[in-house]
Image 1 (tube, rainbow, N blue to C red):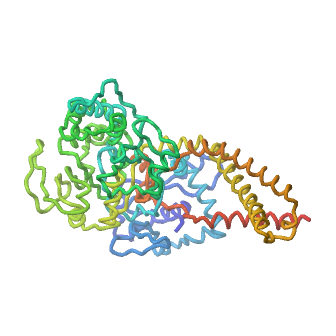
Image 2 (image 1 turned 120 degrees about the vertical axis):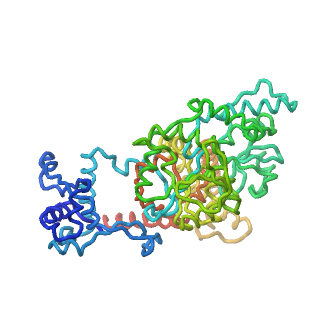
Image 3 (image 1 turned 180 degrees about the vertical axis):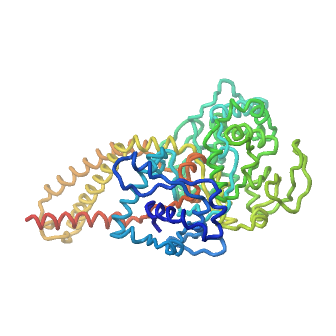
Length: 582
């Protein structure tokens, strides 16, 4: 429910003289202060600022209540109401305050008015307006409605989620190690250099044909490269036809679903071979990164603060990573500790840390659990977890049982579409968030290409209109050639030359439209598949601008006939207007 600051201000003024009648009064007056601004009564900002008043936090706790996890409803969008803040009208009645009475009138007008008041308040306080973050490359985008207030625990992956690496530096060194391995195996790799622009995440390696392919959302191959040579549309059609990319066939297809895949894919396309994995297994690269993390890691000062907000909002925070203890500790200390307040360390943020988790098996089955008991990483078998503990192995089911939190009460955040997002959703029914740093560039590209896309859509629509007209004339010609009447008497009696000339002109128009559409469509590309992620964003620190109480609502999903019905409504509306004008 909505409540203006005017009512709260009045309540607190009354409460100031009436606290003695309440058990909490004595301790309330000694608590920290929360500033509440009354509804503006003066145009002058100075006078409004003078009306700021202090009230006790425990007083706020009397006014508001939080929906508990053991007594909640489901809202009209099917989301749990756990964690929602409710207004205690019974307590207001004690002081003779009728909250709803101050919000009389059509709710649309009231909502606009109160939103403007709140917007001005945030502006005066120097706090960014929520829409400014939402409508930017740092936005959090929603595929499936998610009430963040109802989430009890948030789990995080580490690499390329909480820790973002300089892709060129990290993958460049990985590529160097790969080339050394290939050279030791006798491959002629002299003269090859790392080209990070050659591949992007989301492509698929066809190990049978030695191609790098891009598939559409249905699994059909749309583009392909062999080595560093782009195959023509005809080559792709002849090679793959209607064959589907089936990622379950791991001996044939390899999905590049993480930024760690970039260097491997570049090496594969340049040498059509594979040796990078050995570099990962041998630990050469990670040892180098641990010795000089400042060369490879891009710190994000806002990220630890976003997690701190979530923790203080009552969320249990989990770190679940496949990296080992020494690497995890080094990276997290480097990226977190200097940005946390009051001498906090990164471990203080998390209710549970699990290293060497062996995802995706972590979500699929149970492994032995060990507790890390020394700073050197020594471990011992463990059968019961404790808050703030550091563990190795285990399983997602163990996490749920130890926290007594299950299924959609947990949000898991990661960068790996399969290991982090797909498997946690499929096997545990956890809610999911995908971190995709490329979104920032893609969003900017989409903004800059709005005119391009608008022109492309207009051309495609023109082609469709011309095509429909041509098809009707072609059908008339076909029926006449077979001795049958055309669709109408006029079409049946139409002069042959006039009919063929009309069709010739339309054919030329369509051919010219195709010549213009084809290269524009090639440049336009497609968005990545967000099928498994409930929400997705470019970096974890974006949560800082949305608060831990955000209700993410997915956009309305339309079917093909929805757009046609909307188009028809516009036509009918125009017809009515023109008829009325006459």
